[in-house]
Every structure is written in structure tokens, then in C-alpha cells.
Length: 280
Image (cartoon, rainbow, N blue to C red; front, side, top):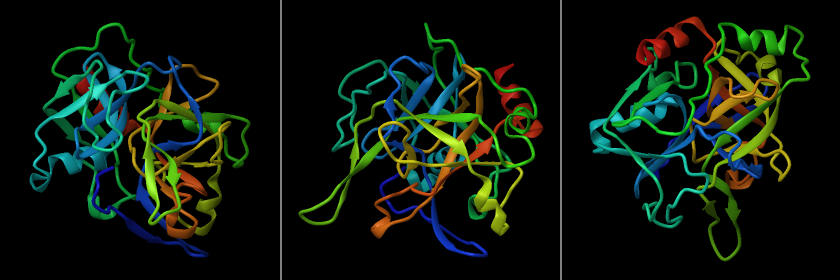
């Protein structure tokens, strides 16, 4: 997320919903060491996203994150990355106060990403660390077509998906305009496959749409932390998608991500080929 407004309006055939690149976990549970390869990517005082370590020096995130950092207008030349379960970041200033951090001055956006076409685009980005991460095994990439095997063809599946990331943890209301809360704690939310939005003609082969339930037990995607990793609950350590946005609902979008969570699959041939080209 960056502090200026970044919103994309998408017209649905039967309803109107605001979508924004997003990814933070509202509610949910502390991840602790459940997914140690889950990363916070921070430009101190300016912007942050989540990501996943997929090789000793490679972090996968959302393409709209890396695209924004690449834009000369952003004047961003360096990104700091941590895998600490509670990142030492001042929630008011977004400045680093302590902890273990890795530096990146090199990142790439999938060549198929077109900002103007979001979310109908290849929303994947890679961050290259200047040194390899020691003591953390990377997450596993999926086999081609794994998501199809997990969700089947009927729109019904018992599979649950975990969204693992840092970022916004709700809002504070009262006393004036509401303010977003940021704890910078790695959390996970439990989500169900929910293709119902696709029934109004908004499907895309790269999408994995999940239903949100903002609560302590489940959690939901919310504006502020794109790029978090999506995992199939039945497959430990196997990454299946990148969280890229959410359908908002509620007064002033306070309940961001209330309806559904938009994720871009990584089990697709062109995405896997692109990632493996960097990992080799």
C-alpha cells in the first residue's frame, strides 16, 4: 500500500463494487512460526507490501507493488525486507526501529503486467535480495494446474486457503475520520473458495476468488498489504496464489475486503516459467 489513493473501479454486471489492490489481514490469527518464509517488504515511511520467500534470495509479491516502486515518480531506490513475526516498525511513521532486515535494490514485474488493465493482468512481482536469507527454507512452488485439482469444476470444495501477510488490522473510529491500524505482525486468515463473483461475468483464468469473514478465527483481506501468500490448508508450505485485491463494502469502505478476496494464481504455465527463470 502507498499513502496516496490507489483505487480501481470495476463495473459488475449485477452489482457495483470498489476494488483496490490490497492484501492485509483484518482479524485472523498471529502466524508466529507457521509460515516463516512470509515477508514484509517496506520502504520506510512510504509504502509496504507482503511477500513470500521462494528462493534464498527471491521474494514473490504483487506486480502492482514492484511496478509502483519502479515508477521514476516514486523515487524509490531501496526496499527493506524482514521475516520477523513482529516487524519492528513504528506504526505511525512506518520507520524501522529494530529487527533483522535484508536490503533489495533490484525488483522485477511480470512482463504481462499492465497497470491500466488491473485486475485483468499478470499481477506478479519479484524482489531480489542483496544477500541470501539464512535459516529459513523457502516456500514450495505448486505443480502446474494444482489449483484446478483443489477446487474441482463444480464450484464446491472442502479445501480451505490461508492468506499470510502483514499490515492493516482494522480501523479506529470515533473522534473524527477513521484511521487504519497497523501492527506489522505476520498473521494468517482462513478463507473459502468463493467463485460467486464470477457468475456475473468477471472471471479471469488467473483469478482465485476467496470469501472473507473478518474475525479473530478467520480473517479477511484488507487494503494496505498486497502480495501476501495464499496457501492450500491441506498442503503445507505450498504457495498457490498471490493476494492482489479485495471487493469492498460498507460506509467509507471501513469493512474493506468484506465480500471477497482477489488472488492471482501462480500454478499457471507462464507464471511458473517466469519464476523458475529467476530461481535457476
